[in-house]
Image (cartoon, rainbow, N blue to C red; front, side):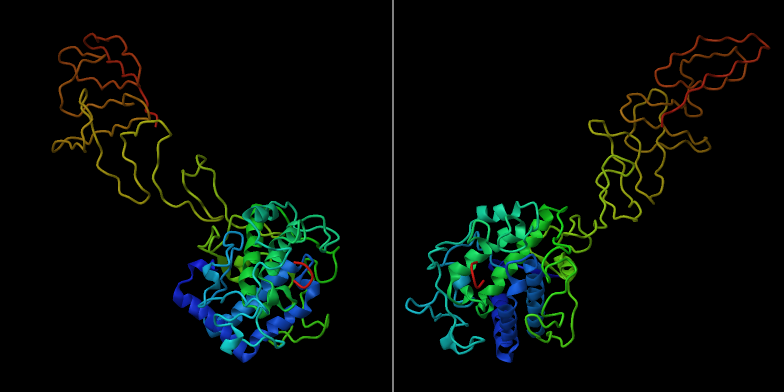
Length: 450
């Protein structure tokens, strides 16, 4: 999965490759096709619910063309709410170039300067920028402006245009409390970016990649919100409407799709950027695979996290249908570590530890003398101070116990006491009488053009 990065994270070589790919697309004519599509797609590219999915498809196709020139290139983005200075490295000569000259706005620095000869505009003219000169956009949007957009509970609402009273799409586009966010950036850069052929300025792609990123961030913040309208909106903006020009349609005019065959791409197909093969550098799931957040209008993902402390062991996260992986057994919080040996699944049983009556727990296993019967292992229940069962090794001296025998009689069976049980009164058998058995015990186991 390719990653789209904040441009600050690009090293010098990555910047050069990105700029080189842009120049290559301009040289072979493919770049200008995107300018013309954007210029004609006012009905879909701006002022309506399809803005965000349409923008995502445009970015996706443009990125594919960039990668046909430079396979390792991905679109970078510009966070214009935190990087708000006209002196930022964004405007360096080795990247986007700087502001335009005072009297006509012509950009004179960088690879896209008209005088450099490599960046003729799609409809003639030269690249113009007037940073911060528009009286309605003297400065760039703030992080507070962005938070206001991300807090919107609904994606969009009727009448599904710039006059919609609220919704994330209208907030991020910049019509609510406008000019704001997307619209404000176009106006602040000015010149070419403030016209209906804004992609003629390569900065366009960094701005719109950030808008795409913020859509995915909003989806994560509001996993239950759905794309609307689903059928009640204007043509081209509903969930299952196909998008121009990739559908080969004739509105607003017939424009052959880039690959020569119609592609029936719909907003429904563009709701989750990860499905489209890319991620952003701040995505929480850069490892790929199913995610724990739901894209708008999609079904719940296939990742399941089990509650710790139920039947599955703590700290275990299982994908649905997977078997429980092997792992250690842990004690409950606050309890002492038990003295029994805990085996990982598949390990062999370690030697048993056997205590003679009255002996302390040895640091390692105890073995019996040659010929003696293997003693029973002593296991402590978690948190108990005494072992649940006392076993005397064969051949050891008989300690004081609850049962004694008359001289000459056979040694009676050993009495085993449950933890905390009192010994029964001593029983003495008369000669010839049958010895009684032992007791038992058990363990517990922007405005206009843009």
